[in-house]
Length: 107
Image 1: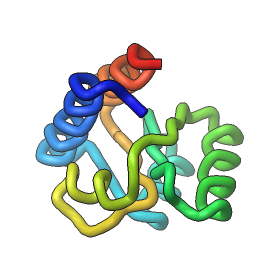
Image 2: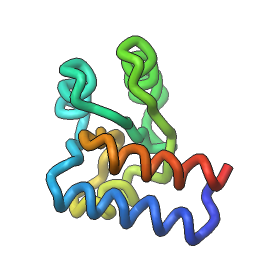
Image 3: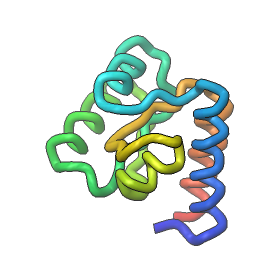
Image 4: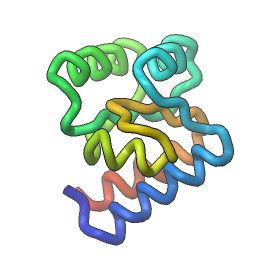
């Protein structure tokens, strides 16, 4: 898990991206964004089912979209102002790069 400052930064960046309409969430919307080439980063909840994790990681690898496992469904949903979310896609390249940088800095 990330250290506290980077964790807070990732969640606040997701919130900002959501408010600027650069995040789609939920299974169907994430899948559409990946397949249409609109997703720059997919985030999959660490507590998502094995089937969900496999489905989205395989899809991202096939379409060459970066993906990360991060946090829990509840925390991801809360960060974007929704109910639990197993996966979400960032549809803005700048936000995606920034979020990914914070995710990788902490590893």
